[in-house]
Length: 189
Image 1 (cartoon, helix red, strand yellow):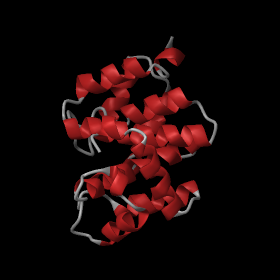
Image 2: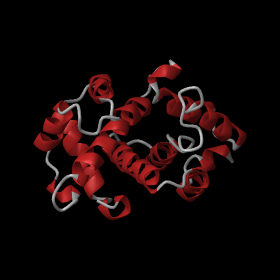
Image 3: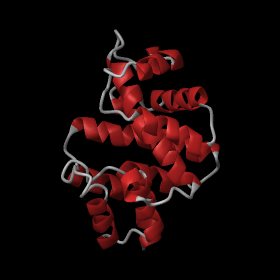
Image 4: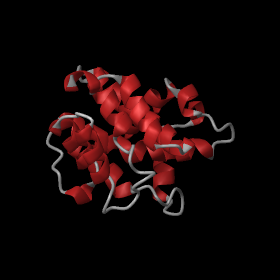
């Protein structure tokens, strides 16, 4: 049973929408999912599993936004629902302060995509057309240097993510832009 729920997007989406009502947080989940799913395809991994995990990585954030609660409360909820320890630990690992090591490819990909997906969304919103079709790697990098822009996005986590994943920042940004473009209707971009 538990193996199936961790690959059932409809079920995972129902958990997401039960706990998350904010349109921006839902779109963040979809953006991270788009990027992580694209990496699953690239690395020939379990696309459904990676997709569901990315979808649920912040599902508890709206109800439990503090570092004392998120993502711990989410992990407890998922445990009660039958999600296995690997799934839960991967979600826990996306927050540095949990001290859960990112020792799998999926954990590294999730961490690398989380802040960047949010940042790309923010860059998209300041484009004249508000369309991701206009977003280029150079504009993302330029905005990363502007500390006043999208202040809540942790640039150090973006850099740490690509370092842990062992990939080039520009390539990673382009890869995520492309993944988000394929899902731009769902993301509202």
